[in-house]
Image (cartoon, rainbow, N blue to C red; front, side, top):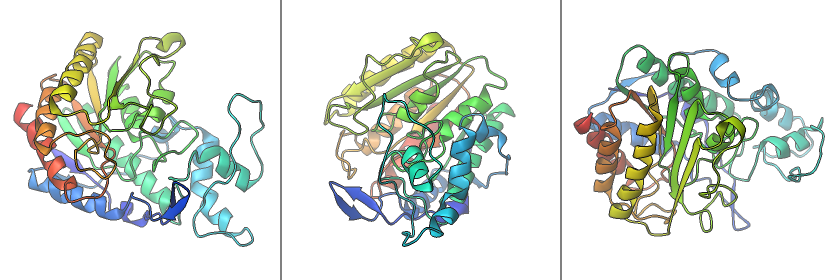
Length: 342
């Protein structure tokens, strides 16, 4: 089993993040990937740098306007009078009201950057681009006959919509990988076990039945992204019934989480996908700085073992997990549990 990673991730080091009205350095720091790579290698995975798969995979998920914005916004921003070093929004379109796509770059920033957690720096686009290549390479390995791979994606992706960045994410790596897998498989499932709801992934596949989206996460009544992730959100049109949200109470521990996962896995079995993408967040840990759920390090081995026993070609796509001393051990536990059961 390979860990696919890119050194381009290091160029993305956002400095501005607003928490309760105060600026601080972003939690999405390059050291996260360094620790995760060390843990993956300690678990026995072989490192592999991704190929450049061109614009096709990302263009299958994201709009042309959004991709153009991501690729050009930083340089255009620097030409503005008194511009900051990073692109950040200060105005957003009001949901539910008619509006026109703005000509102004400031307006475009508000349209495409959904919150204050997704600053665009000089090298953010290249980092996001190669993060998506990692996910695409992992999906390609599965199409070539590998049973499993781990895409160490940084920045992560599951909050990114087709035309909007959110929550530290820019390109939706899990969605891109699932679309690649659709080239061979009539049905693909995405299982998101990040502590936060995979709102971008839900949005991408909201009206589709060929990709089942399942998310276990902290209840949005207390946990960001707040506006999505409720159990009644089931998809629309052709996608009705093909989106499953399992919100969990604050402080949910090992036994209750594993029981909830068992229900999710049962739904995936009934769907009978040809391949599985796991949006692998590690931030449900009891000592993760976000402090929403309370999984032990050992629980990640049990949970990933349960997932591996589905017997599906599986791509693990790295999502969250704040920088902490527990981050590496949590990934090592997850990978060893998966490998032992695969």
